[in-house]
Length: 265
Image 1 (cartoon, one colour):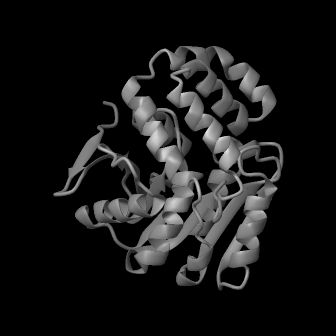
Image 2 (tube, rainbow, N blue to C red):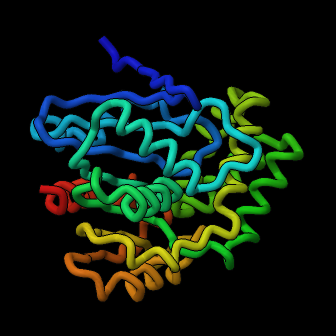
Image 3 (cartoon, rainbow, N blue to C red):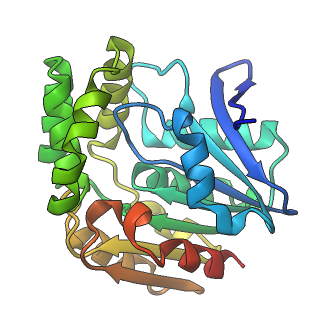
């Protein structure tokens, strides 16, 4: 039997999620920006995070289903925190990848009572100087050039050799993208433009682990360096800089899940 995709329905929104594992501790994963939802990849995500299954119950949340036109990362954090409370999730170990990491930071700052520890990978606290690459994705999506959007997105996220090997899969995946997927992507990508968490760093008091890539073609090495500079004075902060895995280090680095497990445990 496969993993069942469930829904949270509040007075304000509907949000999909799935869970796996049987442990008493709680791990929540917030995925990054993607052209399509990761919910159909539930089985693959369960396999990737199998190290957690015995000790943790793992929840993976999507963004809300009906996105407002102007939807910020701070709004995403509010809705996701509301989903946690709806499911009575507290004392959470929270991991966010890329945009999911930015959401995680906002949640930890604004809702400290429900968060135990946070880990972020390929995240940034200030995207004001990364508008060009995000704007290029948005403009490509607006032009309905789905193949080019998939290509440009994957080329930025993955190392060159892996990107080349993924091309046939990307071509097939592009055929499944709907108009609704593109509209959703545009709204979520727009939320990243001008994101600046710097003023709120001091509002985080829980342990933080950050991972970044020296060869990140989306954010550049500057993103992890800026996180280190801003968080280094906080207690219980640790980090690792990877080389050779690009922005998608959270999927590709062979020791990354072990690092997460060690940090949260």
